[in-house]
Image (cartoon, rainbow, N blue to C red; front, side, top):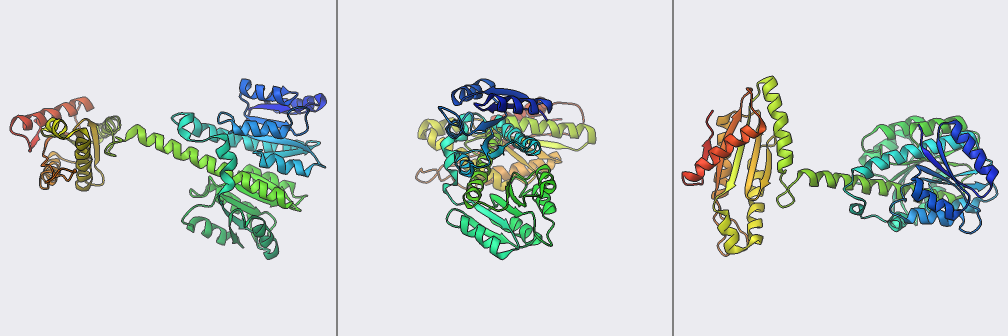
Length: 456
């Protein structure tokens, strides 16, 4: 794995040492000697991760971190604060400023590479979600949102079988987060899968007797419901082999005993913030995908989706000889509705029609609005006689009851339906739609409010 690393330190030997270590592992390294240059380098080089010294003249590392995390364009970049061993308060201040982790001087090679690789993997996943979003503005996020998102209670599961230690951790978080305790592996999995709302952080003591905690972390990362939930582990000061294995599994962060209360709170807050940020990104992607295939007025699929779906079904029809039918539907005399009652009423008619179609078609059918008052229903594995019966059922359901659209007495609405079937021979989406449209307009000419079959 390679990545671009920005190293920021006002001490040139420290910069050169980190630069040499990272370059030897094939990382691309960018350097800066002060806070101002660091902020410029972030904009200029778009690093994948930032190693940031706390103590610098002018703008110190804490302020630089705050500015990076307050910028919607850079808040997703992981920041690792580099502190001296005798500066525990700087660790807490850095985490509260939005830093994702810290390293202590002198920097241990194993800690350096494990943390860099872990955070780079996380950033790559975040970048994929961000790039799939419609735009940065559609996320509705800002650096302030990310930094303050822990102000509302997070859902935290602590896995710890020593009652006194579990209670100390609960007490530290109780005023900030909703805390649940699990005493063993099975209880943790049951709670993680059984909660109405998913947990936003798992805190796991890696040194519990009778519990395979590494396997538990692996299970959390493999299950669909929990794989995106961050994991914070607690390890002993001499338990480096299992710590490295945990990081390889995908654990997001760790604390070394004895636990500093303020650092524990800060790390929990950081992971909850990141979890919520990632969830907002996923929801944004999901919303964007829905907008790409759904008609916003009726909630039915749009023409683009219909064409993709129909193309796949026709391909299966050609290869396997399975029939696929479609219904081309048009609202009769829709223009006078808009002219007489306005477009708002016309929109309500289309929405009500879509609702009746949803109640009438089968679960496997695909109802689409293709434009204006025109609709198409795709019917997989359906012969033309069955398609005709479904079309007739929709037509009857529309005409049988007047539409309640805010007009006294309601509106009487009817539709015309053209039916066409593809049965394993040649042909295309366009040809099938054309045949259905010809049948539809034949029904219009014959008086409307009817279902007409297309010729072979």
